[in-house]
Length: 406
Image (cartoon, rainbow, N blue to C red; front, side):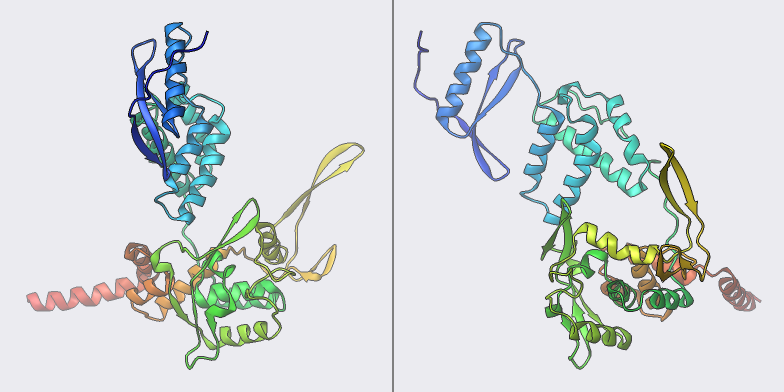
């Protein structure tokens, strides 16, 4: 029997992620108001008729979306008003720490304990990662509650305090370590990366996105402009003109040592990128990891590998000795008795600016810090973390004070 049709009502509209939908609400079998959406009036009308038919026959069940479905919708809604770089960060963390452990569950079925268990993986990361994942959980489930997808927000009792692995204070490289590092990788593309970190203070994503049209080696005072950022999606490089913050867009003067390095690299370059793969394109994530391996393989940290012997997986440990050649690669000499991270290069640059008595505002600009608090926190640790010097200064200060009181 054909369903009886009526004149299509004048439904309300709502815009989600830049798309306009028609919307109305109907009461389910429990009397609760449920939102129904459609791209056209006709589509929404058919959905309402179908739902009403099921309600009349007691077969209509209000089902909340899965965590995966709602997270994807939430990310889509965020894309309309946040930076692309921020969206990439959100998407990565949502996939790893929310969808992976809870994606199969219905939003309405998720309990606080489920989220606490899911957060165990994030708790093994840095405190900042743990905090940001917590905030994402709260934003997503709060949004679902406001949209009446769920009745209760299971994140209301979550706390971001005390989670994550405390990070050690970042230690800059000493002048001796800098020279050892540069000598160890001389002639390699890794050398150019390290030089840009040490002598221009660029972030990893700024170095890997740097193109020659942003490097002015023949200017009266050579400099480079930060105008692009490197990211990867599924290992593929994505070069963006939208930077992390407005402060990240800056002009950085180049010291003579870096100028000479870049001139030599440019003379032999056939790519638009300062650091490129064999095809002249920006590096993928895997290619960057390989670039950094040239440093790791020259350190004396223990190496662990596994080999099958008589059908069993046996663990082997190699203890490199400083100054010796690698057993399986005679070109590699274990010459670094310290470990290095990409961010450590930038931290060394900022520390050297402070030691050179560059004023905090200039340090903030050259580092591309949006907040002066970030700069001042580093400034205070570097400039004033010298107990012997401070003790002497305080003795002089109080001696003059005491004389004034007499």
